[in-house]
Length: 324
Image (cartoon, rainbow, N blue to C red; front, side, top):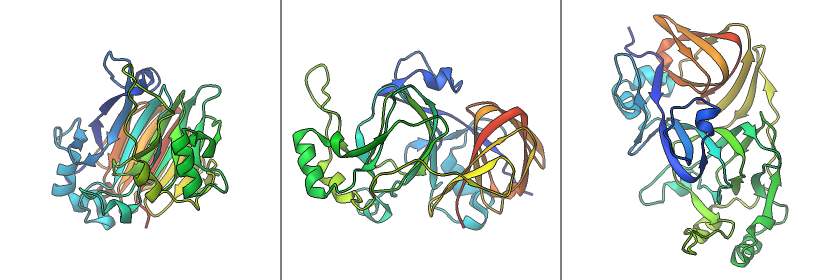
């Protein structure tokens, strides 16, 4: 009999200058008193950044402990894995983030120390009027023209931008130049990588007149100049009512459910990461249940076999898992 059960973790908070307070006010996360809570890492196994099990017999164990000690039960048909391959987080962009680009797996493997590439997807949870997402380059932008724009401090003129609406999903493949504009709160699923090259920081300086370091050559080297403008995803129906597929790629599958009726979910011999975006959901499994309020994320091991997700009223949640 499996020793694993659906695992909730203690959120790992990151304070950056661009953060705000909405992780607490919008998602009920237990942030502290500071004004710049930018990210809540909900499930992570990346070096010293480790999710810690919040309750149950495995309380206090890190996610990497679970991977090392219970890999077969956790991953099922995707066992073995050296680390948990995905990272899920919530972000509060009170200010505009820098313009960034991430390497792919092949490029990441050549770094010192080596890292995974970083393909990611965003789901917009809140957007103030006029907020912008920058995703991809305008048609015709080349390495030479982008380098010239960086030198001139006009990189923003090369970026494709649009005003998102709540619910939009944006797929950011490795090599895509991108940035989050101020006023956005998003949920992000990505590869378990923390490698970011900063291409442009909007000509900002600190109180002493210093700008943040840029990684211009690295950014240009990993940019996919054939990618072009990126638009929000077109959700695709699945076989379950109220469940739509937002992204399906070689790194992860991302689905969103909005339902008032119970959903019976066959895990398919793989783990599922489930994050509640609105409402409350009771997750029932063979030996018990766990209540998931808004803002809560749970990792359901493959060994659970099947689960039932029972909304209290109407609820919305994300379901993330490995393809294949």
